[in-house]
Image 1 (cartoon, rainbow, N blue to C red):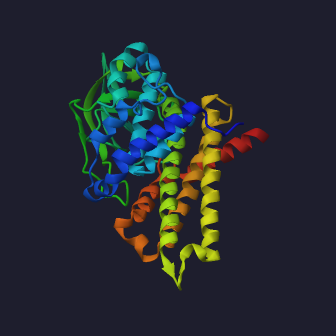
Image 2: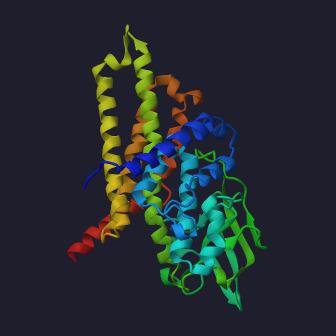
Image 3: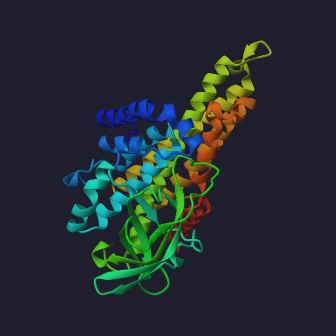
Amino acid sequence: MDFTLTEEQAAIRQMAQDFTREEIAPFALEWDREKHFPVETIRNAGALGMGAIYVRDDIGGTGLGRVESALIIEALASGCPAVASYISIHNMCAWMIDRFGNQQQREQWLPGLVTMERLASYCLTEPGSGSDAAALKTRAVREGDHYVVSGQKQFISGAGASDVYVVMVRTGDDGPKGISTLVVRADTPGLSFGADERKMGWHAQPTRAVILDGARVPVANRLGEEGDGFKIAMAGLDGGRLNIAAASLGGAQSAFDKALAYMGERRAFGQPLTAFQALQFSLADMAANLEMCRTFLWRAAASLDTKAHDATTLCAMAKRLVTDRCFDVANTALQLHGGYGYLAEYGIEKIVRDLRVHQILEGTNEIMNVIIARSLIGRTS
């Protein structure tokens, strides 16, 4: 496998880096402090094709692959992991509609999502079902040409600001085969939102409960057949896990770059910090971990592009490995800053706060181990 970027891939990454340097990085600390969701900046990213990275181009999507997506999300996250992660979630929703929707649904929903004039949120988790996603309780009862939907989704990124919600609901019996997927408009009567959650990180995007109380959703808004919803949700998460890993990588790379620059400027005992061998070793470990994470992330992304038989396992491995190692890199960068790393103005503590949740969402890293272990055991059984 050749890990050298093509000219096109290098140009895509440069475009995303330029956008991040000009429109995200200078404002990230302010957004975090003010808990501001930068919708206009996100729409500017959409105008450059970052709202539908792997949506097919016949409907206006960019038509790129998962490796290119990893490059874009990493670049965006170097400016703000919270904003990059929301853009990842939006892309996951757009892809699910593109991949599993019929032509009429693609034409109805995707044009606005492609440009990010309409924003999307993914709704799987509930107050009583997180890791055990197949236990979800939100019920959709069919009445003629509509489903009447009641239930609550929890920890929904973009809730209250998004225009479209891709919602997993129960249309049948208990278990994964009783789940279906509905696309729900934000202005649907009976849909409301909880309070914006007070969080450790990810302050630059809202997180709310999505509450459905007798919301009537057209049957025409269902993706696939009844009972396909769990399969659709899990397919979306394969790519989502790669992107959240890429967001961790971008944030950790930024933290490393800040630490390297700081250590060259900061002096102790008459020498720059970079002169001390113990601290040099910390930098070497951080750089090696970043490169290892990047290489494996690209490997997993390529497997999803080629529909390799072990793609789901590799995506789970990448999500666990990259989010764990990159959090450690960011945390070490904070430590190398000493007391200054704990101050908000240096930007390191924000990265640490933002990256911590990546080990939880899109399936906890413990669940990633379950997926990996089941794959290994399945080979020998």
